[in-house]
Length: 443
Ligand code: GDP
Image (cartoon, rainbow, N blue to C red):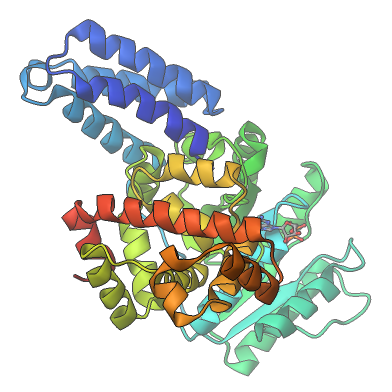
């Protein structure tokens, strides 16, 4: 979501950190560029103004300009102010109330409300071991209740049985009652959405709120809609008093303006990010991490956590050892690709590594997506052990055999061999960055 902003800012800061000394006018010039980048990312103007004023005030002080690395000090100030703009601290869903705790989901139609309801329910069930009941209060869209029922079946979460003819308020009361009787910890109420804001929608949600006293009122917003999402949030909050927002489609190419303005404009925390269509594509919104991503410093923490959950540590260690010795062969590449697929594909991994944002763009340009990763693994598995260990032996005849065996073309085999060579080089270079390798592979 923050790719182009991130690219632009890293351009500004590259220039700044390369200089030994900085003058006030250097900082002012950099701030003008930061300002332009933020406006281009569709951040609300007030937020941009506030942000750059705060950074400028801190950065122009004598301590910064006279310090040994003034450029880095400025980047640090920008980082801290970004975190502050994003809300300072992560604000997870709060379930500290006597059960059944009601979570009211609100939002415009198509924002991703129902999907998010299922994602939250799935996570609370599987990660937090809560007993969750979902109920759709959408009696307008004929298929809405059925959609949630199906999602419930797929995620293994209970849904309130559908009773034809009931209105939203009746359904909400029935859900709370069923949750009490059934000993549920959490009830998630998925309200109806409209394509535009209207008074009727607000009244309906307000009535449900009053009847169920939800502990959380989460507003689901499509981050691709930028400033419209911010305006929607303002309207919902002033009418309903939301407790937080969820930004969906953070995996899309939104410019990031919604995320950056949301907290400052509404005063309510962004609690979660939707990052895809699957159940597990839901992330806690952590301002520190998001700021790190925006500044292109990479999300080391996120990668390490995710890797720890999925990576086979022993295998990773032995690959890391080989990499150190410059012995990274095709067998290792195949293993590496498999691990990458588990973590969420090439794009997912590279996007989280510092300085890899640009490389990711190149890979995308080279069309190296995850289906290609699968094909590459097929090619490697059609090779003999010797070929995997010593790709140099691959002559035209062997390549033809491998291509035939994996249902690919010789051209694809060539591309893979070339990629392996480039990766081996890259990894050797990365190997020099001890700290990162140590954290990634537990070396
Ligand atoms: P609702 O009308 O607000 O309930 O919207 P839905 O939950 O039905 O979602 C509308 C579409 O958006 C569906 O196709 C979802 O799969 C998709 N969607 C929801 N959240 C995300 C997300 O975080 N990322 C992506 N890429 N798609 C999403």
